Length: 240
Ligand SMILES: C[S@@+](CC[C@H](N)C(=O)[O-])C[C@H]1O[C@@H](n2cnc3c(N)ncnc32)[C@H](O)[C@@H]1O
Image (cartoon, rainbow, N blue to C red; front, side):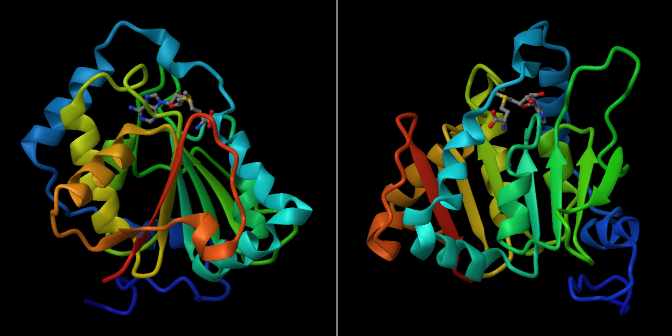
């Protein structure tokens, strides 16, 4: 592996595009099973899954005064690394990404465009993140499983919010997504969600005794902060 191929988030003076490209493995062979799962979603006649929603809003409580200890926990895990929002919609998590010191906030959303094919390798839009130097936000128009499958191992932290069966109706897709997210999460990085089936899948596998390189985090036990989330939330940390 050359120096250029290795992912190093601390490279100064490297453009958003170059940093984005360093996260991706363009030669990775995507299993035919994934291609079929993605194609099946793409041909669904259900435009409601592209609706604007605000499930992520719950995490905005982390900006509040009471949440200082929880903020410290998230900052410790996210600062200096890429943070990827799968199905991020209008990008409500951008402020969290900025406050927690992410180097990139990448919002991967398969919004519906009649004439715009999805492309996991293309930056649709990029801009500085907050008022930080060397941090950027990037929009990618792609299927989330397609995108995560193209990432190198262990490069980022992830959030998914509102990605349930009304958005993706196939349990096998959520299982594949869970597998790929775990692979692409960096050691000590986080995977967290409000109401997302891929994370319910991770919890189910852990509770059945499967050996996965992640552990569930109880935010209240860890930090004393109770996140009020009627729709349920999960946080996992990659441990190896
Ligand atoms: C219920 S909304 C959630 C939006 C946002 N995360 C929130 O917190 O409200 C689902 C989002 O997933 C996007 N989406 C639907 N299917 C997708 C897919 N296969 N890959 C990527 N994004 C998808 C939709 O465009 C929509 O923005």
